[in-house]
Image 1 (cartoon, rainbow, N blue to C red):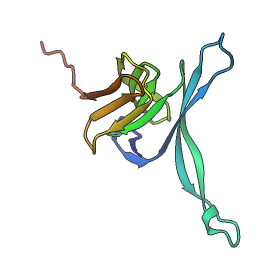
Image 2: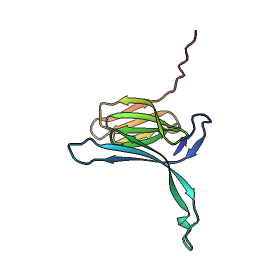
Image 3: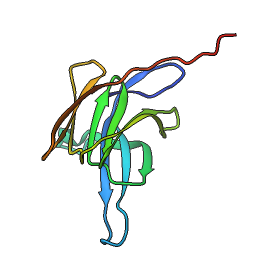
Image 4: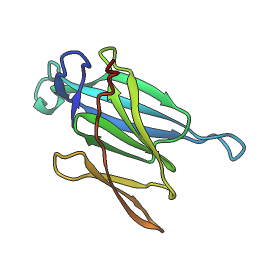
Length: 143
Protein backbone atom coordinates (compact mmCIF):
# COMPACT_ATOMS: atom_id res chain seq x y z
CA UNK A 1 0.00 0.00 0.00
CA UNK A 2 1.28 3.54 -0.65
CA UNK A 3 2.20 5.03 2.73
CA UNK A 4 3.54 8.44 3.68
CA UNK A 5 7.00 7.80 5.13
CA UNK A 6 7.98 11.36 6.07
CA UNK A 7 6.13 13.96 8.11
CA UNK A 8 8.35 16.69 6.69
CA UNK A 9 8.50 15.98 2.94
CA UNK A 10 5.24 13.94 2.73
CA UNK A 11 7.03 11.39 0.52
CA UNK A 12 5.01 8.25 -0.31
CA UNK A 13 6.48 4.79 -0.78
CA UNK A 14 4.97 1.39 -1.54
CA UNK A 15 5.24 -0.67 1.65
CA UNK A 16 3.72 -3.87 2.99
CA UNK A 17 1.91 -3.47 6.32
CA UNK A 18 1.44 -6.48 8.58
CA UNK A 19 -0.41 -6.80 11.89
CA UNK A 20 0.06 -9.58 14.44
CA UNK A 21 -1.62 -10.98 17.54
CA UNK A 22 0.27 -12.83 20.29
CA UNK A 23 -1.89 -14.69 22.81
CA UNK A 24 -0.05 -16.61 25.55
CA UNK A 25 -2.87 -17.87 27.78
CA UNK A 26 -6.32 -16.82 28.89
CA UNK A 27 -4.93 -15.11 32.01
CA UNK A 28 -2.72 -12.75 29.99
CA UNK A 29 -3.78 -9.94 27.71
CA UNK A 30 -3.11 -10.32 24.00
CA UNK A 31 -0.35 -8.19 22.51
CA UNK A 32 0.19 -7.13 18.94
CA UNK A 33 2.65 -5.56 16.61
CA UNK A 34 2.53 -3.55 13.38
CA UNK A 35 5.31 -4.21 10.89
CA UNK A 36 5.95 -2.08 7.83
CA UNK A 37 8.08 -3.91 5.29
CA UNK A 38 9.94 -2.56 2.29
CA UNK A 39 10.47 -4.72 -0.81
CA UNK A 40 14.09 -4.46 -1.94
CA UNK A 41 15.98 -5.88 -4.91
CA UNK A 42 18.69 -8.45 -4.20
CA UNK A 43 20.89 -10.60 -6.41
CA UNK A 44 18.78 -13.64 -7.38
CA UNK A 45 20.03 -17.19 -7.08
CA UNK A 46 21.25 -18.66 -10.38
CA UNK A 47 18.36 -20.02 -12.45
CA UNK A 48 15.71 -18.61 -10.07
CA UNK A 49 14.83 -15.02 -11.03
CA UNK A 50 11.87 -14.97 -8.61
CA UNK A 51 14.35 -14.85 -5.69
CA UNK A 52 15.44 -11.32 -6.66
CA UNK A 53 13.19 -9.61 -4.06
CA UNK A 54 13.43 -9.52 -0.30
CA UNK A 55 11.57 -7.91 2.61
CA UNK A 56 13.37 -5.39 4.82
CA UNK A 57 11.74 -4.18 8.04
CA UNK A 58 11.08 -0.44 7.66
CA UNK A 59 9.35 -0.01 11.01
CA UNK A 60 7.97 -1.97 13.95
CA UNK A 61 5.51 -0.78 16.58
CA UNK A 62 4.23 -2.86 19.50
CA UNK A 63 0.61 -2.41 20.58
CA UNK A 64 -1.20 -3.20 23.82
CA UNK A 65 -3.70 -5.45 22.07
CA UNK A 66 -3.76 -7.60 18.96
CA UNK A 67 -4.28 -6.19 15.46
CA UNK A 68 -7.55 -7.64 14.12
CA UNK A 69 -7.70 -5.68 10.83
CA UNK A 70 -5.45 -3.39 8.81
CA UNK A 71 -5.90 -0.93 5.92
CA UNK A 72 -4.19 1.95 4.17
CA UNK A 73 -6.12 5.22 4.23
CA UNK A 74 -4.78 8.32 2.44
CA UNK A 75 -1.13 7.42 3.07
CA UNK A 76 -1.76 6.43 6.70
CA UNK A 77 -2.22 3.06 8.38
CA UNK A 78 -5.64 2.24 9.81
CA UNK A 79 -5.70 -0.56 12.39
CA UNK A 80 -8.44 -2.26 14.33
CA UNK A 81 -7.50 -3.51 17.77
CA UNK A 82 -10.64 -5.31 18.85
CA UNK A 83 -13.08 -2.49 19.61
CA UNK A 84 -10.63 0.34 18.87
CA UNK A 85 -10.05 1.83 15.42
CA UNK A 86 -6.76 3.74 15.22
CA UNK A 87 -5.23 5.80 12.42
CA UNK A 88 -1.43 5.97 12.52
CA UNK A 89 1.17 7.83 10.49
CA UNK A 90 4.76 6.78 9.88
CA UNK A 91 7.75 8.82 11.01
CA UNK A 92 11.13 9.02 9.31
CA UNK A 93 12.61 6.50 11.76
CA UNK A 94 9.88 3.93 10.96
CA UNK A 95 7.91 4.32 14.18
CA UNK A 96 4.14 4.85 14.14
CA UNK A 97 2.52 8.05 15.36
CA UNK A 98 -1.12 7.70 16.52
CA UNK A 99 -3.21 10.40 14.84
CA UNK A 100 -6.85 9.48 15.58
CA UNK A 101 -8.89 6.79 17.28
CA UNK A 102 -12.49 5.67 17.60
CA UNK A 103 -14.06 3.37 20.18
CA UNK A 104 -16.48 1.09 18.34
CA UNK A 105 -19.37 -0.86 19.83
CA UNK A 106 -18.37 -4.05 18.08
CA UNK A 107 -15.27 -6.22 17.64
CA UNK A 108 -13.90 -5.08 14.26
CA UNK A 109 -12.75 -7.93 12.03
CA UNK A 110 -12.50 -6.20 8.65
CA UNK A 111 -11.55 -2.71 7.42
CA UNK A 112 -11.86 -1.34 3.89
CA UNK A 113 -11.14 2.04 2.33
CA UNK A 114 -13.46 3.47 -0.31
CA UNK A 115 -11.32 4.20 -3.38
CA UNK A 116 -8.63 6.80 -2.62
CA UNK A 117 -10.80 8.82 -0.24
CA UNK A 118 -10.63 9.13 3.53
CA UNK A 119 -13.85 7.14 3.91
CA UNK A 120 -13.82 3.68 5.46
CA UNK A 121 -16.08 0.76 6.32
CA UNK A 122 -15.51 -1.38 9.43
CA UNK A 123 -17.23 -4.75 9.63
CA UNK A 124 -18.12 -7.18 12.38
CA UNK A 125 -19.52 -10.66 11.93
CA UNK A 126 -22.52 -10.05 14.22
CA UNK A 127 -23.55 -6.38 14.35
CA UNK A 128 -23.04 -5.28 10.76
CA UNK A 129 -21.13 -2.38 9.22
CA UNK A 130 -19.82 0.99 10.39
CA UNK A 131 -19.30 3.74 7.84
CA UNK A 132 -17.04 6.64 8.68
CA UNK A 133 -14.58 9.21 7.48
CA UNK A 134 -11.28 10.66 8.55
CA UNK A 135 -10.31 14.29 8.23
CA UNK A 136 -7.29 16.31 9.29
CA UNK A 137 -7.82 19.76 10.70
CA UNK A 138 -5.05 22.19 11.54
CA UNK A 139 -5.63 23.65 14.98
CA UNK A 140 -3.95 27.04 15.12
CA UNK A 141 -4.40 29.61 17.84
CA UNK A 142 -5.10 33.04 16.43
CA UNK A 143 -4.53 35.99 18.75
